[in-house]
Length: 119
Image (cartoon, rainbow, N blue to C red; front, top):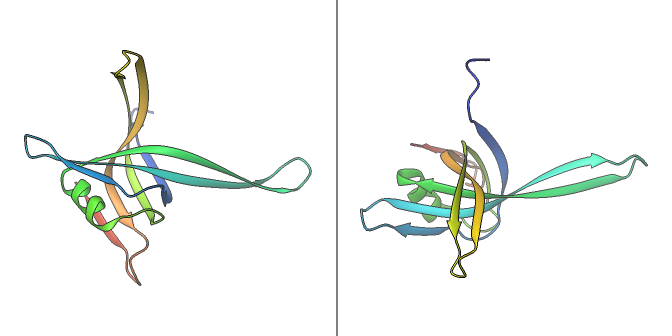
């Protein structure tokens, strides 16, 4: 059990065009949402589908690639880790959000090719 770590792997569809920002210190940050779907049969044997939405954050080279080559609806695979942070809204309400910090991305929608990008 000592080798277990905070590790997430997902395959899904990008929910909206990623938002890429270059910070004052020159670091590149890209944010986007990823939808994953689960298909199963309920107790009556009827096919069901359930969609989960994930908040994604990427930095540096991976952020640049995602910002330039990934758009709404694209199918991608990611590897990363969970990160929870707190922030305050403009109305002074405290919020907590769990995001996935992307370390690697595999572009699954490139024509007859896949491209793997990592930190």
